[in-house]
Image 1 (tube, rainbow, N blue to C red):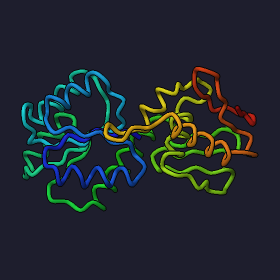
Image 2 (tube, helix red, strand yellow; image 1 turned 90 degrees about the horizontal axis):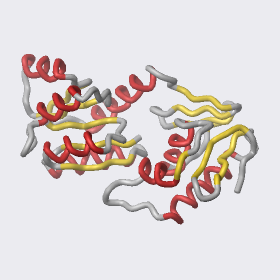
Image 3 (cartoon, rainbow, N blue to C red; image 1 turned 30 degrees about the horizontal axis):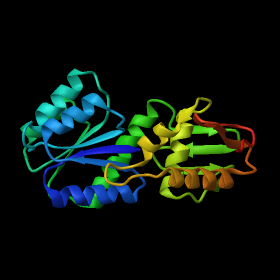
Length: 226
């Protein structure tokens, strides 16, 4: 999953980014509201927005209001020092999905993130199945029959990106977009290694990663290769 964090407190931003990356998510960071608004308007490849309210240039409340006015349904977890029932009600009414008051424990933050991603997935297909392969996207788990696959964060990221578009082509650029952070470039060799290792771990299950030469990859039934 890809997450945008809009937070101008460097210590808090670093802490939540590290927690999300440890959980296998790709993370982008911005430290002002105007940049967050621009990224959400121009790119919007995000599965979750973690939003501070007290942002410079454009308040987090305005970022949220503009996001919902554009019709975007991305889940939003607000983190803020502003307390009080009236403030919580205001932010939820603006379209936030959840609300955490600073300071907070990272364990609670991680639990809120998991709950939001499960909620979003449950509106569609919470668990994807293709032959003997099962993929739990929000839980970041996969099985062949009842045996759990031992996947690295990057390998699961490749699998999740392909499984979300099963039967359709996923370009190399789309894979890189879903896997890398702004400050952590993914090389062609790194992507090739992740695809190779994933293909090896799926071997024998009846579902494979097919290479479309010069275009990208596709997850499909059959022991695809190349």
